[in-house]
Amino acid sequence: MVSALVRLWPLACLACVSACASATPAPTSFGLAAPIECVPFARALTGVALRGNSPEWWTAAEGRYRRTQAPDVGAIMVFRSTARLPQGHVSVVSEVLSAREILVTHANWVHGLVTQDQPVADISASNDWSLVRVWWPPIGQLGATNYPIFGFILPDRPLNHAAIAAATTRAARVAMSDIR
Image 1: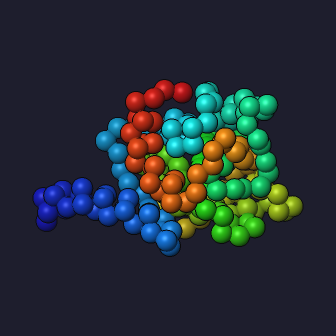
Image 2: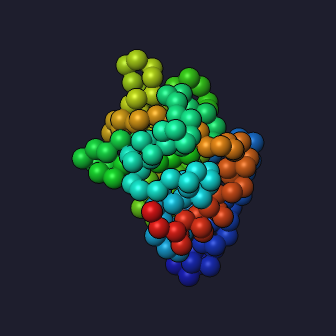
Image 3: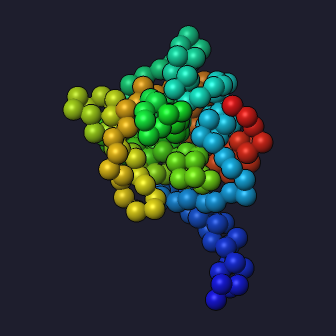
């Protein structure tokens, strides 16, 4: 039984990646052969030329990229540092579902995985995207932790959902060989 699963694993990974390109996004994950971090993955996926830990991106983007408090497809959501996320986190918005719900594609939210079209909910009291909850794949639902964010950085050439899905595998490969 185990050997059958090992033989089918590459096909299962390929099915997950190809499912993400469909018109109806579904949360998916795929494992990679090497460690991957969110910063080089977001940089490779969006073309944003920022370096450093995730929270540093917000300040570094000032004057170089447009920053906003509202999500847009292709924008980079920048998480603040917290005790739970000391180096912060960045995700790429892959779809805006409503005023308070988006889908993101990101690396290393679950260690060693790239996750595509993962739900994120704005739970801020002011509806201003300053506090979010993020999908946690191991339990198949939004996690219980509230995460503060700075906002969204808009790349020079934002991608649409189909372009993000098509570029994800390549961005993961680039990110595995990149450093912060």
